[in-house]
Amino acid sequence: METRHYPKPPADRQVYLFGTCVIDLFMPEAGLDTVRLLEREGLTVHFPRGQSCCGQPAYSSGNPEQARAVVRAQLDLFPNDWPVIVPSGSCAGMMRHHWAAMFADEPEVAEKARALSERIYELSEFLLRVMKVSYPGVPEQDAERVVLHTSCGARREMGTRVHGVELLDALPGVTRVEHEHESECCGFGGTFSLKHADISGAMVRDKVASACATGSKRVVSADCGCLLNIGHAAKYQGAPLEVEHMASFLWRRVNGTDADESLNP
Image (cartoon, rainbow, N blue to C red; front, side, top):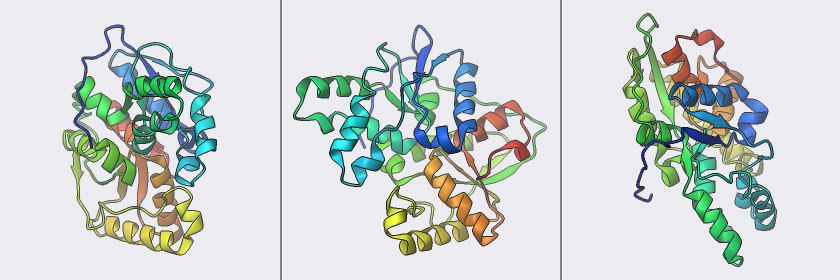
């Protein structure tokens, strides 16, 4: 993972949100809570309507031309020199580290993608390193024990486990519990879970069992694909484990929203 230089908060207080297709289709509340967290810091959030997918599914499935078409359609959607906030570590990693390389044979497009990639921030990273947030929490809220899950791409390409740990550990009333299989893949892996269903199923069973062994009843992650996989597996197994996106968990703890209102696919 690269060492990144972090700028000061944007002087004009303007940012873009790249909402991701999974949040759009399956966990829209996580996107809304992302906006709420950013607005809490005095930022104006812009959501370009033409955005869709980061291109990762096609790219990781060996379809580079399809991925290039998806990316090319979005390169002009973020014209102002504002940070682009992504509430998904794996999508942020795709945009920051792979978009420019995909157009190595088209220098002008590659340069446009490179310039945009420099403005890509995963949500937790942006809150901590750029906005330098401090969350006092709501005193009357119940104490919670949670486990953190960081997707493979987010952990290795964006280093977001560090950011997640720092945010959770600073919240009053929240105890983050490490578990035996924390560093392992949840088994989703995009199309991997379809092509290798038996292996994927075994991996997520290990993940659920390891999380449950801690006594925690909640998994927090900044990656919706993983949350969907872990949440549905836990429900199928009858395991007492709920899942919550990092944005929703942070907003709930800071704003005092009841835990029963959180999304659990």
